[in-house]
Image (cartoon, rainbow, N blue to C red; front, side, top):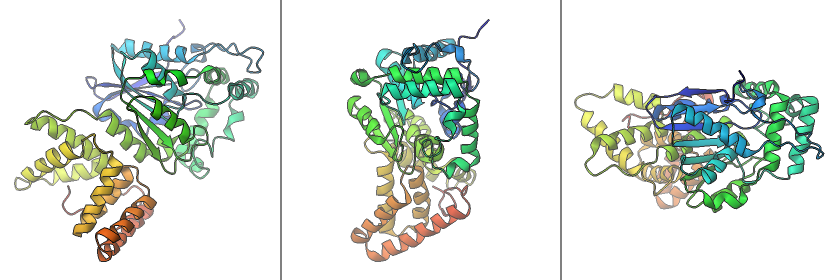
Length: 411
């Protein structure tokens, strides 16, 4: 019997709120590997493969197009959305959060507009309401049907990510995913994108929506993201510097932080609900400072310091950092300035690392330090620049070093 469901996997606590992750064309569910550990901590995460991609059969979509205009394929975004709903129904999920990259994001927009009762929160990453001229996608479909996905390999470095990143193990693995993609499945997804246009439907979306753009994305430039964010009521927009079309692959920390902030964003805990406040604070603390740092701080807690650890988790992280009034990039800028003003260099080093996780670039951190020279004093800024340089040097020397290296207080 032919399977009528996409290949998928499940990660995270079985009773946690459901979150579905959709991939981009030419990739498998592995495109979400960098975000998976953090997202699966608080969610039951379902990742799925597009037809003909990863482990999904190409027959999940019709492959009746020639791609040359004489026989346009009949595959549609609604057909892909139906596959996702089928997966959700199999899990018994009446409602779920959803995030998708490129065509995966397009599926999310369609679901949120046409099945608003199913989608609790939405994020679209490097996606669009309309992916350009339909003729371009029909031509690509014809090319891939004739020559296979190898015809697309040479153009992915520089589009998906930088040419240098393409030589990394992660980049090379994604290129191999493309090579392994079934030509009929890939071409059918091109047919979907040729027919896809959500421009008129964006205003229907009611789910809280986060739009993420790669500032260097040539496939769906930031203007595409701004169009979505401007049209979807109340949508937020994050632009990730130094990122192309697969922003979450090349700049995983910034994209993960944005997604965590969006999908773990909840109303403030009720007054006096210390347990809820502590849980919310711990989730944000881990997202900003990293698991290694927080685990070390918890392990070092003594009866003497326990009340202080509880206090900062509930109050600093559980009330201030969890607030919806400012995004985490802005909170990082404010925190850096305050630490510079008071000369807290050890804490400054920790929060410079946190600022990178929250999506600030080194250049933007430098701008914060430079502005602080005017309002906090040149000597304070001079010390801050020296601290920042040490942090950057440490990161360049040992890229996997965590944000706790320069913290004495382990907050």
